[in-house]
Image (cartoon, rainbow, N blue to C red; front, side, top):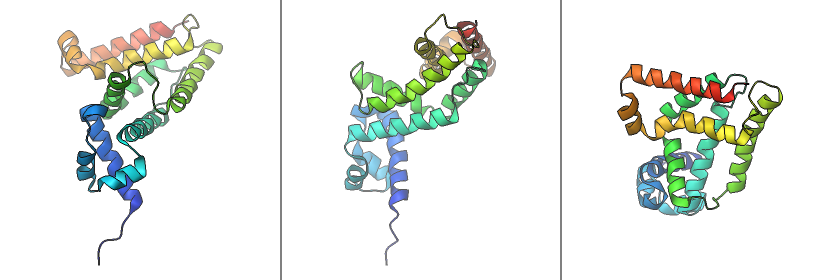
Length: 193
């Protein structure tokens, strides 16, 4: 008698294999057959569970972003702490920024699959920052959405271009620590009242 099928475990394996495949190869370069082989699942199951490759990518990115939002909520009362947590998250989960970068290369400024969900995701973050502005703990000299964009760029860019970080700043632990301190200081100055 064969082993009992576990559809939920199969979905998890497919999802994890898809994260790795898309982070490594992007949307255009990813192959469903490699995802299936890594997940020990057949391609038909991937299509049945997740739809086509573009839909699978959108689901992967959506879930990874939700995980980030839950793990590292923006905290206007502690911007430097939030920057620390954000940088730590991306160091531990580099695949998310890779997925976002691939998405940018693939779609550019065109509308994204599931864009309304993404807009809601960002609207919640902007609202948290706006609340900090309304309470006077964060400057209102820069619109909240712009400020969120600037802060995330500041925190994330070191992980997106590690080669540039190494060349400009250095590649040793003290160099990374100094840069993190500089990023937090820049964030503090950007948000200061």
